[in-house]
Length: 467
Picture 1 (cartoon, rainbow, N blue to C red):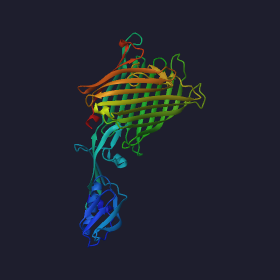
Picture 2: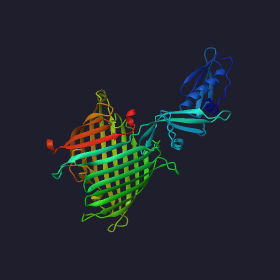
Picture 3: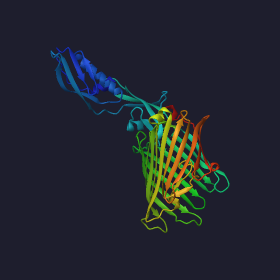
Picture 4: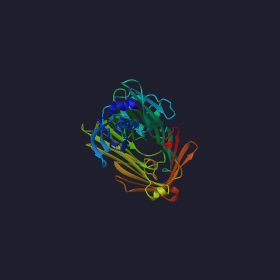
């Protein structure tokens, strides 16, 4: 490390030979030197220690000198700290905790330069954590260079997840739900792929595809492409394509900005109008939850919004539509809750739609009800131009991935009376799988009329449980 610190050391010192003790007052510590000749090695050692922790380019500059002691035998040297530009590292090595090289991240790490314990994210979800960042000399001689070694731990969770509920709305029971495949760190380089299939009946189905590239070849940003199709019985077919530029994986927030194309085709004799829409969209995501799937603290925020002009045979030329979705989750165990191994989880979901010279129709509304929003009700049972859902849970964590919980879900939806449901659930490990079951009742249900919501997750990645 002296090859680095020698470039940054600036010292103008002429201490009296008669001084028996020299006190060095630095910005964050005080050291003692027995002679003037010992001052420079001490300061070099301090700079080397700070450089090893990542503070390259640090300079100590002498700002003042005083004398202390009855006979003036102690000299006090006060130093300030300054930062000098440091040339880029000659070499960058990225390896996992076992020492195996991780290819494809060198260019990204030169750009984002995360500090120790910083997360590298795959589509906003935790992919790697930087466990160590160290420096080494890359050459000898007067103009020595340096290299950087990053040691990363894979904390991504590739998983297959099944969400389901048993419904008996028409007198004929059936299972409905969702199947999703999530692959962060695809090909080991923070690429991300997600596939979702959702079935609410034989004629009501949804498909979603998302692919994210962490670092584009031309610009210092990432990219994301997503496609969705929503087929609702014989009412309509809706398709949506988005292309977005995203922030780099080392940033605390995952930000996406892009354009999109939406197409609504009203089918059969359904009331409504078809249109095409060119949109501008924005997405923000951040998560500080300490582990998946059973966090004990942290928060998560997910915001999506889009606005666009509408083009249809019966629409004015300046018709426009805006939609927004916000989901927030706070997990904490303050005071006596923590002492009893209890965790409070509060989640809020808000959806809203607004039109300009256009009245939003059913295909534009937000959907509410089911295991992911309002338990105790059927999947997508309600459609509203705006709505707010609150999900409150008191959890007893019986293990790293298991828990028991009581919950109350409530909602306020446009045009409807307030909705309320309550129940209990559990999350248990079964072999390599995680099973979550929630039993929920609305205020109008009899005991035997409660809903069962089921979630099966097969995590086949390393996961956050290792943190």
